[in-house]
Amino acid sequence: MMNTNDSISLDAIDQKILRLLTANARLPVAEISERVNLSATPTIRRIKRLEELGIITGYHASTDPHRLGYTLSVYVAVSMDRHTAERFGEFESQVQGFDEVVSCSVVTGRSEDYLLKVLVKDMRHYEEFLLHRLSKIDGVSQLHTSFELREVFSRSAV
Picture 1 (tube, rainbow, N blue to C red):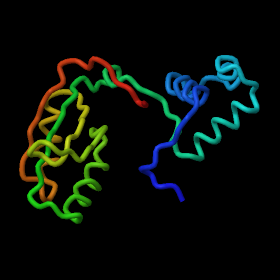
Picture 2: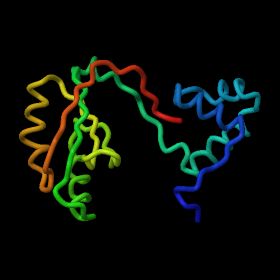
Picture 3: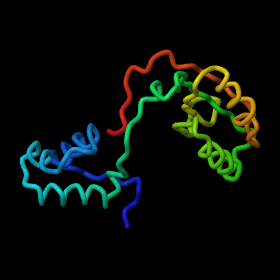
């Protein structure tokens, strides 16, 4: 069984297939095949292999948060009162249930334990989220908020 920390070496064709699918997951196999100079059957086999190896983890639609009314992006650094697996597990379980949280990472190199990216409609929405939900999670001892002025770029894959 492969360890999830083991990296997998990909050839140039696999890397190009990944770049194409990352840019547009709905790209037809015929077009992918043409761009990587393979016929459809080996291209399909390569895509299937990338899925089986867990490199391609899914396909989804990208949305524009601003067009959906989520105009405020917030980074929230969270400090926990105790560093136990149970405390961290409960926190992680709860924040996964908040639609506003689009990413959650355990971090090091700073005094906080987690860094969340939160999308909200406006400052009132953020205040409700912060005061009535996030700060109410058992073990949260400190919150530090930074507001995103402008996203320069974002990548969904390497």
